[in-house]
Structures are given as structure tokens and as C-alpha cells.
Length: 248
Image: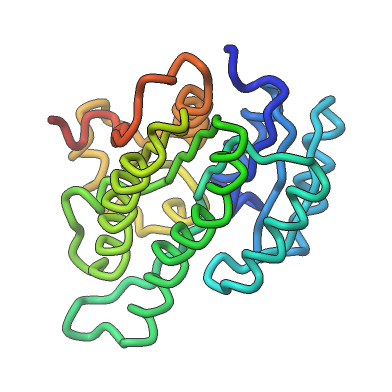
């Protein structure tokens, strides 16, 4: 797939799960990958996994919710690689609780990482993209940012915000050959979803026409497409990767 080989890509929340699958997919396509996460202890292993397979990667510890941390790391990435062409905003957390019982601290934490983090990273990635007149921004949203979910008011609000931010970004940068799109995964098999109670998992499967959860590679495949030249006329869109759980 053209448009990925030789590019420099930044993937946040890259130490595990969907982020790890995304960076591996981009590296396999020939991108040099900046592996970014706050979990420093896991970064070396991810980089080793990519480089041992013949890819190119480097690790960077960053807190996406900390403006100074984001500025410093993006400056470091551009200093090391000379450019930045693909940004995948994947970092995110969940702190679930019913709305009436939700603590303000959990609301603020989820919004700061899931939404403000996307804003800060995008803000620091756009200038070099504008200069080179080429860029791909892919934000990982969620099906629950489109349809809501009981017990996830903070998470759903943050992911709905990511979708709105994606569209606003797309309008601002389109004239410079930069695209911005979001991917809204449904029920994806990750460590977080594996920890759910068996009865809850079964009830979720019944809502999916395909009758099964997705895999992290399903999301990674969509990211790779949106980061490629083949997607050069797609911007401001939300790509649903949900097995038919939400249509239309």
C-alpha cells in the first residue's frame, strides 16, 4: 500500500493493545514509528519487537494530558527524525461509573487524556505537516462516542468530542493536503474487554450482527488505509469498525 513506506509516524498509547497493533502495522508497511506512551517500562519491548522484525522504531515517554510533556516529546521526535507525517491519537483510558455516582476527578481525568490529549498532540503535529504540505491524522474514537453507553458518561463524552475535534481539524488543514479522520471501534478484544464479566461479554456479542468481537488488527488495518495515499480524498470522516453493531 503506497503512502506509508518511508513516512514518519507517531502513535500514542502505543505500549499495548490497539496502539501496539497500529504501530506494528505501520512499521510493517515501511514507516518509521515513534512509539509513545506514559508506561515507560513497556516501551523498550515494543521497539525491540518492531526492530527485530526489520522495522524502524524509537521509544518516547509522554503524558498526553501534560502540555509541556507533549511539546518536549514532539520537539524531540522531529529533532531525531527530521519530520512528522502521520499522527495516530490512540491514548485513552476509562473510569466507569454511573453518572449520579461519578466523581469529578474521574470525569476530569478521562477528558484530559482522551480529548485534551488529542488536542495537544494534534496542535504539535500540525505545524510540520503544514510546512511539508502533507499529513495524515487518525484519531481513535469509539462506538460509544456515537451511541453513548450507560456507566460511561465521561468516556462517551470524550470520544464524541474526539469526533467533533476531528471534523474541525479536517476543515482547518484540508487545503494543505492534510487529512484528519476518526476510527470508531466497537467491541474489540483487548486486555480491558477480556476483563469484563462473562455475562456482560455475551450480552455484547448479541448486539453485534457478526456475532463476535473484533481484533486489534482490524483497527490497525483501518489506520493503515487512512494513513496511505489511497485515502487522499477522505477527510473529516468516521470509519466504523464494529462488526455491524452500529450502522448508518
